[in-house]
Image (cartoon, rainbow, N blue to C red; front, side):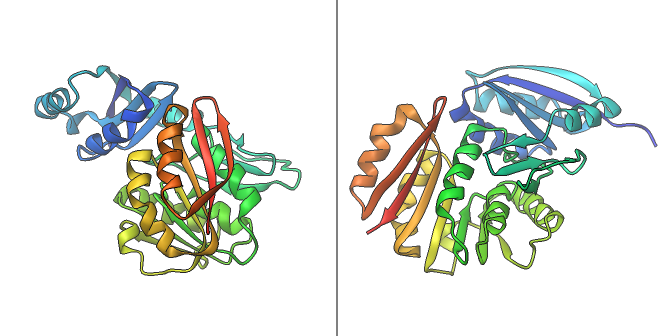
Length: 277
């Protein structure tokens, strides 16, 4: 069988624009994305990328600079696997890909994540901030909702932290497929229900904790729905938020029945634990 040739598209793009760019590129059959600071790398089979898709990209994102290079299939596989290393995401949680073994985990909670087209390997600040909050606020027997589950890392972490059940939701079909695979690899498939949809399609209520590692433009408009789905004194953990948006976020929270219980940060990112009155 002839080896496939892949294209690597490398973008100079702000972190705020990355989610929009990933959503746009997903329609063209891209098989992987990787972030390195403010550079986004996207991978697609050469035969799936043509002049029309190239023109549509430039039309949709005229201000973004990018380059294209070819990667033979064997190099693509090696680069993809070598680029992801086990990482101690928090003092307690170790995240690793299935192809990297960890000999001595010193009692850490080990989560195995094989990413596809969604972020969530523990390498990004927003994921680490969320995991730090989860260590503190997810309690045994909690009922948890994970919005925008991505790779499923947060849903899996919730169960590893002894939550009794987690509903994992994402509006991206690739993320749902990836989450289902990772849930099975971590042997928690009986405790996590994975659904394609949004918070509006979630039937369950009375959650103890809601997790949302999503950009502010999505989080803030759905705060009232999140509030309606958590118990009194229930917790919402918010990440994916930039420090420069802090005042806007705090103002939006002040107009709800949510109180900020804790705020943490790493580099330009912030995360909150808020509690329903």
